[in-house]
Image (cartoon, rainbow, N blue to C red; front, side, top):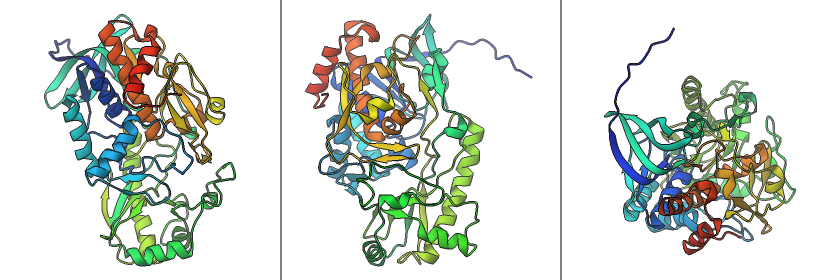
Length: 452
């Protein structure tokens, strides 16, 4: 059965040079990079805040891979941490030399960055369809409380995470089979912790990354990670299953915590991992949002019974949305590879570097030796559609490459590169696929990014 929607005119409510859709680490960095390159920028977001995974999902460990020898691009990703520290929205992260971003406080950080850059903010608008002239995208249609509205732009950046714009514009995309997708997570924060008792136990019984390879998880490392400290929680949930507090089939409940505060809060509880969730299917998202909250309560009950200092633990809040790691990617002009990821890929069209950090598909390699890869501009160029760049976890690449480039700090590197490229293309009135990469790299360097 089908319903035919009547033809209707849609009002063009806004025109801009660069239009960024999605305001996670990639989209926010893209909008800032473009604005600082001197063009008009509009940032469209479906939720009521900027920040994406940081603020909406509650993923606060932005650079938890960082160690003394880690080499990074700097740029806007580093600025996220620096500004959050200055605004009281960050605390030292438990397993690295980074700062954990406060998911609520970062909403204010993002607001300030957007306003200072002169970016036109458009919250509460859901992308519906691309506006096309042949194979060139010239804007988007959104849906909101105001109905359908059209926004036109010289260049569009798809930072939706799922390549939604590229897919609907006709660019070839690859969707990971559901049975192979990385698990989805419902993040949550808790209160009521006795910090002294909890940390005494952590120090007396430290866990390492080798402990990740238990039960349902088997994790490949390079070996150097195995004896390093990890804020890993597993034993309370094993005891809870043995005693019937958690159903036996929920043996995937385990994972890491981010920080324990003097106020008794423990944040960034990354304990719920659910396979089989399709982030492009609203029915699947509905099912796993509900299931994830149930599993979080199981985890809290187990901690209350079996973790020192947690006898008065209670739920503080859930993230606003489930966290999705893996769905759709573009088939790009260049698709990043496992070889590039594991062996320090080098590219003439680099828009930034990223440390040798792989986290996903059963692999964990931490960047403790100074090794890094360069991120090529071409992996953000979709085939078959002009005027469009894709930044963030939906860039072209294979599975192991995705396990690295999906991480938020890498998304910020890619986003800043995409924003600058779009800005320069708009200024020069030239196509994104013939843009002079040297000009993009010069602006990246001016903005404080290491590209080689």
